Amino acid sequence: MKPSLKKGKKGFISVSLDEDLSEDDMAAAGIMAGKKGLIMGVANERSIAWGITQALKEQGADLAFTYQGDALKKRVEPLAQSIGSDIVLPCDVTDQASIDAVFDTLEEKWGKIDFVLHGIAYSDKSELKGRYVDCSRENFLQTLDISCFSFTAVAKRAAAMMNEGGSMLTLTYYGAERVIPHYNVMGVAKAALEASVRYLAEDLGKDGIRVNAMSAGPMKTLAASGIGDFRYILKWNELNSPLRRNTTMEDVGGSGLYLLSPLSSGVTGETHHVDSGFHTVGMKAVDAPDIATS
Image (cartoon, rainbow, N blue to C red; front, side, top):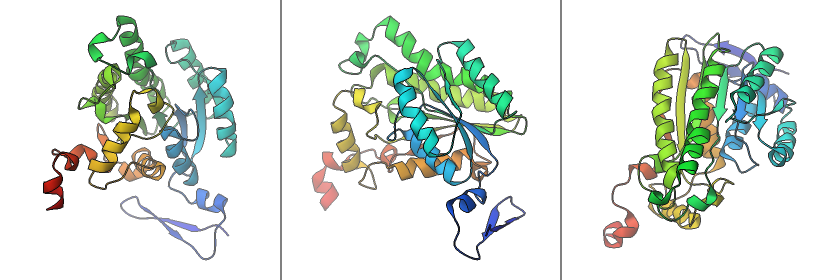
């Protein structure tokens, strides 16, 4: 039996449950039911983008995915199939024609989209250790192109398909705001990405399109494995965040769902921190154990 839905004056949806629901019924009743969106940046089941994807699917969203290269295709296709998606498209974000091909396909299949999740970033692993000042020109340009400009390129194409408004979300990190050991040029790229979010929010807001960034705490993802001494960064966050724990997939899933759904209808141009409160702390407990325990 499917639940009955009621839409209140404020746009909130109430669900009347008379008996146990199947997963399909729950998805049909979800806040993303009927919404169609593109997921870019899933690498495996530990990706932040995958955590958000699961939350979106549980709330009824229809999803399409992109990947770059055969190695990622072999990882992404089974994940997409596991949630019932058969739209898995190749995309090289450094090639405008490749981006265009993705949106041309989505326009043919769906006609419109409601949201985009951008979780794409790249830098030469050999330069994610040591000093930022030693960054090469080649890697600087490549990192900014893939990790920052790609979101603007995607946003331009996506906006043209959001005739009824929509939401865009990209992924950033605290290294955009403060110096994090070994994050180096990726921190510069993420700072530029966060600025892009604000400018895109202004450009697209008049069309009812919201643009936000999520700044998750350090997590054991494929991307994080390339950062030097990452295990120490992870432990530091756990010891010094107000919640005294690291960020979970459930954390990013819930916040991602919020930012891509009508629940955040009045939110745009924001960098939303999901880091157990780490970004709020000025003096670290580990630096002052006598204060922390007194």
